[in-house]
Amino acid sequence: MKQRYLENVCTLQLDEDKCIGCGMCGQVCPHDVFELSGKRARIRDLNACMECGACARNCPFGAITVTAGVGCATGIIMGALTGTEPNCCGGGTCC
Image (cartoon, rainbow, N blue to C red; front, side, top):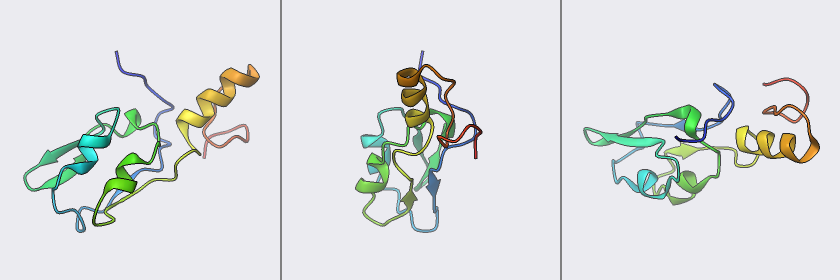
């Protein structure tokens, strides 16, 4: 079973107009968030994204943006470390 993070709070965005379909995002994503559809990447499962930033760092055309370290994975880790409920913004409620 794949790890699930907080639903609908991920900062990941894909600009399909910039995408050339090289598939690099899918190769580096540890949670299989992307898939190729035709000659372009598309986000297959946004809520599986842990916002590590590997896809954005490896996209040769800047088609992907994500704010690494601010979302679900960070919220879950901080919740576990502090014994509190996870949240995506570190401030009590989700964005």
